[in-house]
Length: 454
Ligand code: GKR
Ligand code: MG
Image (cartoon, rainbow, N blue to C red):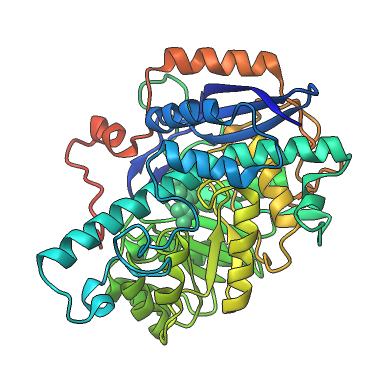
């Protein structure tokens, strides 16, 4: 099955003013939709980030994949790496003339290189960091093509993508109610949105009720890092009281110092299932992890394979990894990361950013086929409030879980009219890259995304 065409379409959809440590979501969220078409007329779908720079890379790399077989994902990865100027996959740092080994910790040159200090080491470290950045970019660009090719392979074989990943170990994938502090509506708009304001503990409990009533979620995550920690502790306590027995998580996106993180963690003993990214970096997380009663989770400090060894060192920095196929290089590479988590005894959940149904389908297949993904996954789906590029019907929530599609491939079909509308919205919305900070500064000029803030 040879790839004959690839269509790359940027889309924009309405997004509520969700607050986070970086600022506030703009009125439009961006995504890129990828359609891979084969010589046999099969089409596969992928979805990825929508920022202009990323879109440009996806468009350029798409050209490099024309003529390849949909099974040749190693070649695809290598071609994308070559296009983006990253080291050839499989080459070691020694071969590339820089620093050793794929698991080298680029941030700690002294420990790594022993006596080799000074300008030469500094240069090597910088070069390795540049390489790692390019590798991360390759993973991000490759991901939607990997998903689209799996969609095609599933359709050709007559099996769902979860079967291509080893077969589902659960029939439905549980997601959590992902709560955000939020304004009633975007300041430039006349009407509040249907979710209303949530700026304190009472508002957060009300929001949880709304999402749980509509979706049946059985666990709750609160995006923190917005208000001083004591207010966020109060919100978690209010949720604990309002929803006894429902697992709770708090994620301030590294807005706190180590000291603040330890204090919050201890105060929420017995209340949180896990605490996500309270502070920045592996060393800080390790200090917090050693002092708080609950596991720490991350989608910030372990985001490439070389982060595993330092995070797993004597003082473990994390107990839970949030998997995300959009930046771990697609579904197959994410399955490898899951195997690594298994080897290191790490529990798993799944990370999300604003996304549409193709991503939800891909996340659901991956989670269904990952035995050690035992915590309910994150999803921004409720905030999209029904907007989608896929035809309605296949994906739905029952008791907070999405039944795993059983049709061949991802099991979702593109809604071409919706795609056209969302593409037009993209052209008109005037946003080309997510920037929560500058949008926040329009209304609060003194705001900075300073981390740690507390
Ligand atoms: O949508 O504002 C947001 C979230 O903060 C998102 O950008 C994060 O990547 O959900 C994410 C997280 O868990 O850190
Ligand atoms: Mg997070």
